[in-house]
Length: 216
Image 1 (spheres, rainbow, N blue to C red):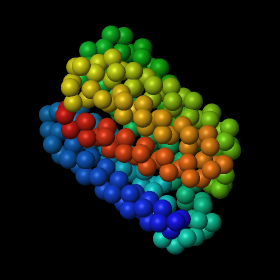
Image 2 (image 1 turned 90 degrees about the horizontal axis):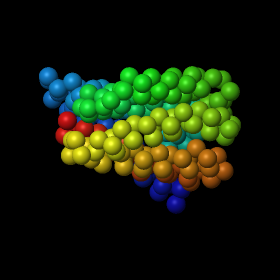
Image 3 (image 1 turned 30 degrees about the vertical axis):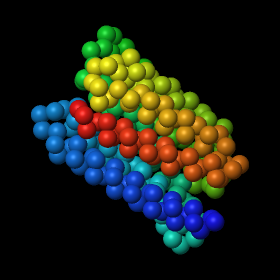
């Protein structure tokens, strides 16, 4: 059964990275004169590159069954992905600012960028012990507090403006779902590794966000 799940995860990871890359290239190359669409393409490529740092080592582990030998690169990949996920939401926030009429957007942007900076700084601290098999749960919680607030802020922006661009009407829901799948992983995956499988529907939520960006 473990082998079956491993093969399923391998196939899923390859397809996910492939679709993220294709969507990023399509958005970027068809965005001439459409800055929000170009920015969405950059956002997709950031997602692809960041997740590749984590998923390619995961694929190597599934193929070679040498998790212990690949633990350091796995941990570094998780760290890189945590940072690029933050950049992903910053870019999505900027897309919202470009397409929605927002009052006091400078104030809210300061808040969002401060949250992102705090999140990235926390991800860079050695106390996270990224390269350990079971890193400290408390640091996983601390670094994700500003990230969750950031996600709620971006989701709130798209929820309040959901009727402006019909193709983006469910963007807020995709963001909420991504965090809903991510939260149990942060809290309980150390105790029950099977909870980590929730990262699969979380990845689907990200692809859904990119597909919605095709309407820009």
